[in-house]
Amino acid sequence: QVQLVQSGSELKKPGASVKVSCKASGYNFNSYSIHWVRQAPGQGLEWMGWINTKTGNPAYAQDFTGRLVFSLDTSVSTTYLQISSLKAEDTAVYYCAREKNYMDVWGKGTTVTVSS
Amino acid sequence: EIVLTQSPDFQSVTPKEKVTITCRASQYIGSSLHWYQQKPDQSPKLLIKFASQAFSGVPSRFSGSGSGTDFTLTISSLEAEDAATYYCHQSSNFPFTFGGGTKVEIK
Image 1: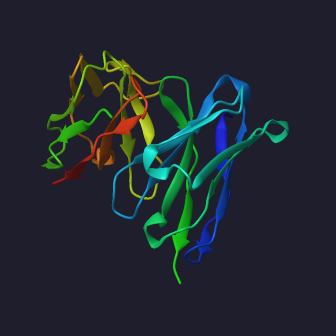
Image 2: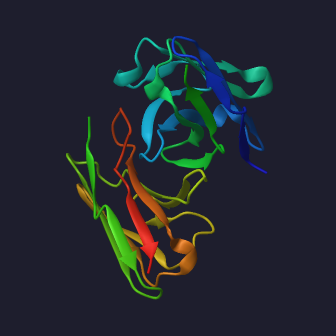
């Protein structure tokens, strides 16, 4: 079936980097963009940006510019989110979602905890 | 950036009651407005796409309406399993944005 499987929880220290993966299956990977959305504890959904799975071109929300990198490995239908210079405020659940005008399939989320 | 303002923030409702959630966009977005349901410790699930089109498998008690700047999600007869937070989302312009959410509690 169509699914996005994300990597497991991460515990990182402030200033470190983290890389989260999102593996697609059950559909043509190139036919949908992948978006990343985060949710801080007890808060709402925050759009982070997206990557075009045909071209590999990423686009980032302004709040994250400079610390975020989206990448692809089309050979394994996987998208990656890398965040550098982590701060305590980056503690959140990070979701990937496939999109073609709307986000119809979501991963289960990856919890990233930033704590010294 | 398009700001989506949802109301109310919270609603406590008895089963079988009708629930109405509104979402107002800060500028025209046509019908590029979608609704999601999120239950605790779960990822969001798409309920309504393009303002009024029910996504596959969504119970018929969920419906959406509106266009332009004003949108509504309606649950015609609330069931216990509908306890969740509901979010609107616009895909008209980048950056994509979400409303702040409406938490629906069962009385």
